[in-house]
Amino acid sequence: MKTTIAIVAGGFSSEHDVSLRSAAGIQSFLDATKYDAYIVRLDEDGWTVQYGADTLPIDRSDFSFQSPDGHRRFDFAYITIHGTPGEDGVLQGYFDLLKIPYSTSGVLVEALTFNKYALNNYLRPVSGLHVSDSLLFRRGETLPDPASVVERLGLPLFVKPNAGGSSYGVTKVKSADAFLPAVAAAFEESDEVMAEALLIGTEVTCGAYLRRDGEVVTFPITEVVTTQEFFDYDAKYNGKVDEITPARIAPETARRVSEMTRRIYRLLGCYGIIRIDYILSGEAGAEQINLLEVNTTPGMTATSFIPQQVRAAGLDIADVLSDIIEGRLN
Image (cartoon, rainbow, N blue to C red; front, side, top):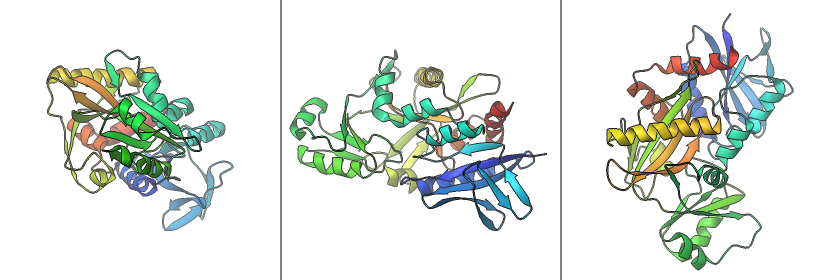
């Protein structure tokens, strides 16, 4: 019999619709001879599954549903929610309680990587990795004088939600007067806001996953070039970016970025596909590797970074997804 897969998408953040596009991508990539895959949509007002032409409610007590042909349960959950509750450990804890295997890292890793400030400080001691200086502000606290923030971090600087993705609520601040409005915009997305010193250089991103034999496989690196102020939501999802795979960097630099990605994957204890974004600064061939962020549920549309990198590696995305699923089922 085929394995029944729930592709869990939607969620409760601004990235809801992006997640649904990733779910459609994953459904198209999965090997239909091995898996029956259904998109399960999580919305604030309810959880539903698309079962043929029917939209049916999910019983959240056991993550099952009643179909016209009987009661149905899932063997595996492929989580592709960008933001809460799929990228912050909440959904992982739910599936742990129900003993349903899933595609991502566990609760601790997801919670840590979702919190940019905590992750930066956790990874700061890693040899060969540079992490930008940053400050954290929590809702309800008295904000510092903008001049003191600028004195420490310089200009321009970035203000961003501490938890989130897809560059919602992110502002490139070019003057002290723009700091407080940028913080207010970031608080629309998260209860914690981070101000971060600007990193200048070449932006690259490297995907990785854990193969069934235990090897951490990294994909060819993608260079990200945009005419926007930075790689914001408009650049990511409205085509205002050039994504060059493999990146136009020296072979030695590519080797070091790939090795750093494997080190971080192992250090955190990740599972499934992740994508790590970096800025490379300094002399070509001997660049400093600067961490931007770790994405544990990266986009999976046909044009997203990971499918591009998988194709550039000469791999079949269906085989990669099967590795992830079977690695947890067997």
